[in-house]
Length: 124
Image 1 (cartoon, one colour):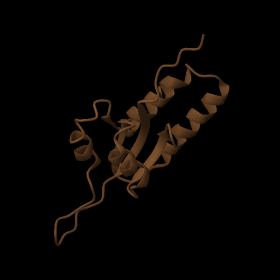
Image 2 (image 1 turned 135 degrees about the vertical axis):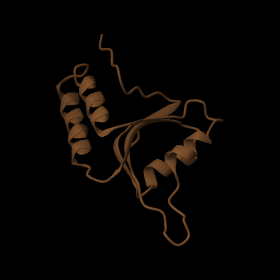
Image 3 (image 1 turned 180 degrees about the vertical axis):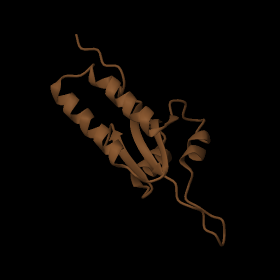
Image 4 (image 1 turned 180 degrees about the horizontal axis):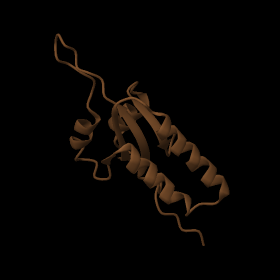
């Protein structure tokens, strides 16, 4: 029996590892892009929606930990994820996000924001 530790997808939520690029606020009006952390904190109605921020090094470490649990095909894909993390040079924040499938606002924000790079996603 193959037991996977790490990303687990089921019908009630989707998982993502993302990089959130930090854009400076407008010097004239002080406005900036939507803050994903703020959106998730306001999504209390969707219990399974969750976000954990990580450093670049912690993100790579977490991905490498999952390699031992997978077969050769999965190891190749996980290496691609690790390389994608290493290639990101922009300032910002890496995060693991689990989004309730009823939480369309957060899911669409992740998928459509120009300042979010999806490294891994269940439905991408």
